[in-house]
Length: 234
Image 1 (spheres, rainbow, N blue to C red):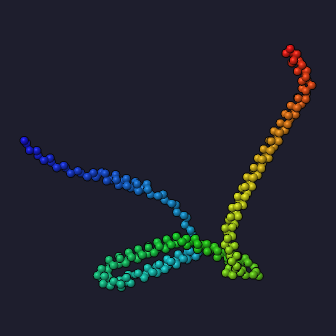
Image 2 (image 1 turned 180 degrees about the horizontal axis):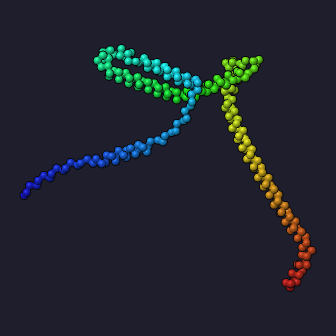
Image 3 (image 1 turned 90 degrees about the horizontal axis):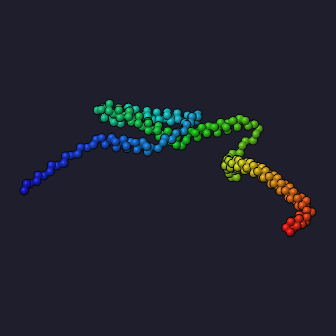
């Protein structure tokens, strides 16, 4: 009986390199499709004088602070490393200054945008301008206004509620005008329907009068017609 030889080991399968790009392309397409649509950013607010002074003050303060991280001050903190490898330490100092400045500017910009600082400072600017204009327009003999902190609670509460009450009153007035206009249209429709009913009643009354007149005219002839009918039947 012949001895069976062992089958040769299977050849190692070659990796399909062409499948990987398809997977990567599919993953990239999925990521692109799943990305949310970009939200249009709001128009930037132009800073007024107060907001511009705040931005300039921060820029000057940041520049002054970054000036403290000069090469001389930085090298004084690492004298041994500065003597042995000055170019590397200078590069580290420059990168530190750039990164720290970028981070500070990004944090400040985020705070200004989140807190809506520029818009609020512009509103404060407008309030101050309105107060100045009112002071100039007021007569010198007029009594000075009462300080807000001395006003009674009812007056302060009414002042705070006045905008909400005014908005509600405007909304209610608009609804009232709309309902009045609808009521006027309904009243016109009711008038038209009443006129149509009156016309129909007039026609019905005329028809009733005609029927009664016909009955009155045919009344004397009923007996004669009955006799003729009986005679014809006989």
